[in-house]
Length: 231
Ligand SMILES: [Zn+2]
Image (cartoon, rainbow, N blue to C red):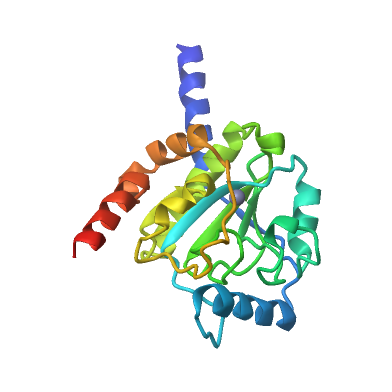
């Protein structure tokens, strides 16, 4: 009987912990120059002339950083400009890659920029998406942890309840599904990257856990595109 009570108590404590989802502010450098470069990116890639870089989020994109160490990841996002660090993005504007959230290997969620500021993390949909990077995935090997999965699930729930305009949840490796969709904005047809993050295993588990939110994914995006073509 005693053992039974202890099991119940420990199960309750785990629940209490997950209810205490916490976001740690660890802001990266975001000067006027980075804001201006972000506006330039939106003009160059989306033909959007913006007074400010605040957005109405519609999409959450989950990622991995392809680096297994938190401090290296944070230092990378802290840079304001690309400055030749990413040959694959050459000629596409000098604002550095940027993301709103970074989840460490233990599942602690760090907020790097204001949640509704545009960041450069996913071609075609940076103007309306919130990016969540997970530390890991070096050499494109899926090593994301259970703690990271739990943190992503809690974060998606938090974001959906805070921003009811969010309708979609995708993995970065699925981003090209948006091509041809009304929400896709990239004007340069040659500007594409091949992505593997965070992979099907992680996305399937995340989607299964938050299915009560009704967020749309790959199959819904495809259906919506077919409808757009038919109209
Ligand atoms: Zn990514």
